[in-house]
Length: 234
Picture 1 (cartoon, helix red, strand yellow):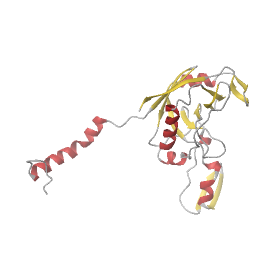
Picture 2: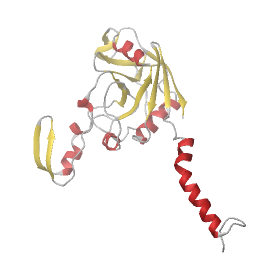
Picture 3: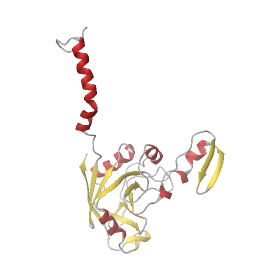
Picture 4: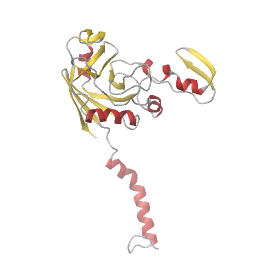
């Protein structure tokens, strides 16, 4: 069956196809690429807008957006604030009750970094977790300085890995599986960055802190509340 366009001979079709191919880069440029989703955190200290990177950390971004859609973050506080380090929130209400969460998330920090994702530098947003790399759920933190020691460690090729350096020490002929399972090498998954309201982040960072609820330190004496979290661009 002839699948050429109606009434178009082969030569004319070839010319049109060649023209379309030549124009395709310009067409793609005109159409643009899909913009990254953004979430606005309305806090008692001001608004913070976070741009997310689903192309680098898709599962982490999807997890965060689901909590946003579920209105999980409304009424939660920044419960851990450390000057020249980071501000952390999204897990506790103003009475220091921990909010229920879904099942924890599989860590994808290495995949994100290998895909060209950002590191833990000023303004980036990462998932908080326990010592278990796969324990992140809803809590997140915003880096207020460059925190390279929080970055995931990429494992060189080979099994065993011929040479591996970590924290100033060199290891040779290490079984790959032992490196891939080592909790110290997972780091923290960066999945977004503050694009507006970094002055608000710095304002939160500078508040006076002390003991609060179950925490012996680093809790803002005047609660910093997330009033709402809204997806403003998808």
